[in-house]
Length: 115
Image 1 (cartoon, one colour):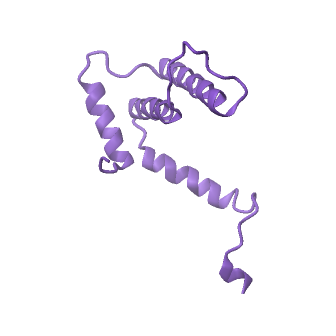
Image 2 (tube, helix red, strand yellow; image 1 turned 45 degrees about the vertical axis):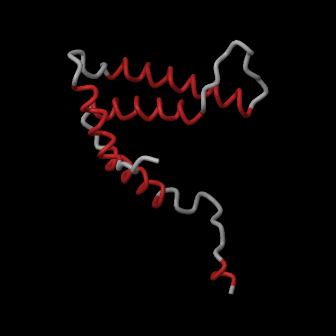
Image 3 (cartoon, one colour; image 1 turned 45 degrees about the horizontal axis):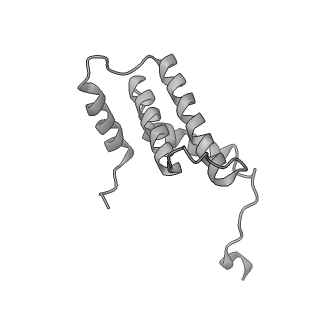
């Protein structure tokens, strides 16, 4: 098993990979289209695994993990192309969830709370 990477390391790794090509990152609209395409592939895999639509015998096996990896790669490309730090983006969304949505869901009571 490989060493775990931070989001910053993943963003740097993707940037180094893309940086070796003259074409560089796709435009934001093209990136959004790629993300939509990858989301469709993920949806198809989830439907095959958990839904009512079995794979055809001629279709190759793809793991949901691989499709999520494809989504993550495109998401990192998108963020990098717009100079967005995904650690900071994560912090922003977690702040939103822990403040605005703090009481939106039913929390699991901890054992100590019941004593």
